Amino acid sequence: MVAACGSSPRNSVETGKNPARPKAEEERLPDRQVRTDQIEIVQRDDQRQIAWKVRSKNSDVTLRGDGLVSGRLEQVQGEVFSQNKVASRFRARVAEADQAQQRLELRGEVEFKSLEPPLTLRADQVVWHAQTRRLRAQGNVRLSSDVYEMGPFRELWASPDLREVGTPETWKTK
Amino acid sequence: MENEMRRWAIGIGVAMVGGLVGASSEDVRFRDREGNMEITGLSSWRAKQLDDGSLSFTGTGSPFLGKWRDQGLTIRGQKIEGKAARSDKGLKLSQATVSGGVRTEWVSERSGQTRTHQLNCNSATYDLAQQRLSLQGGVTWTTTSANSPRLMRLTGTSATVIFQTGAGTPSNSIESGTLVGPIQIRIETEREVRADSGKTEVRKVTLTGRAGRATYSDSSRTLVLTGSIFLEGDDTVLGGTVDAAKATLRFSPQGELVEVDLEGSPGRTTLLPTPSSAGGTQ
Image 1 (cartoon, each protein chain N blue to C red):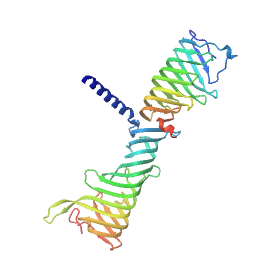
Image 2: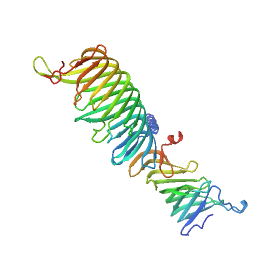
Image 3: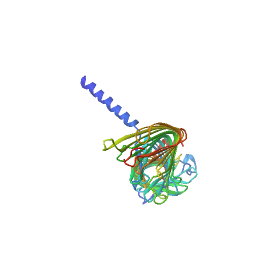
Image 4: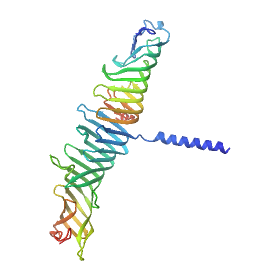
């Protein structure tokens, strides 16, 4: 499940909520702290569909014995998926990824771009919320297209393709 | 000790300011890139981009303020649910339901005269395809003319405004605006009249009254009142009081009240301006 780390040109870590387990629980490896120059983490949801991918050229990650990965990644790029298709692409200065929690938190000049329709979301921080499959953007949030722009919001939630956005209370009352 | 207390006071002050800032509602703005549509003062917002390129939205504010430049339309209220469609001039308001202290305002132009219509009510719906604005609850319709003290104010319980359509139609002209009552009427205007001295002077004319229903039309420049009408005028067009079943008030292209036709009890009465004056009565 975990590809080679360290000095390899590219490491890919792909797990879901129920990743393949070691042959026997007693064989579980100890957690390892790894600094890697290039890494890609792929998160799958409960249906084994890709939820998001994140790539970094500089990261400090923990490779857990159960095959899951968490850690801090810098200068990241990636994609958020919807029904196994890319819904939007993102980049940010820093990402905190945690496969066990299915959590992806992006910080610092976060930018999401959807493909269809072409929309751009900018914020100080965006968290991918696995249960609701929504992006929760916080801090100076703005959304724009070639036709309109809106903001700044303290907090704005969005669908992965950015088609639907709303302040938190409008999602809760729906 | 005094310095200590001052530090505490400053600390409490900072905490209070921090609390106020934290509790303040968002002041969010939505606008199109053409500068045609803009909504400000939003405290909550929800929007969805639809497949046809239009946008459905829900917003609240205390109040929000929405402007659609090409439609000459301004709307204030507590909540708006609407749809905006793409056009060559930006986003147009195609549908809206507004509630909570609604103030709708639009500018119409006819015969070179610019008039501002302001309608206040509890709730309103707007439909661009049907060119219809419907208002419910405590409706007040005030029309004012640019660079003039002329004013027409009607109050009623509900109203429906149908805008004119078609090529060459002046922007936002009213095909018909119907108010259902009981209705209170107030019309203020100025008229030039020839005084006994022979000099021309400007007089203020005020007409007040009640009716069951009122229908206004830009194209015919008339206000038709029906249902237990009572009118009271203080000067040239209608002096004194009158009861009638139907009244037709005609306005000049400049918005001046020039004629009142009364039908029913106490009988048909017509008052016209004297030809020798700019606005006397006969």
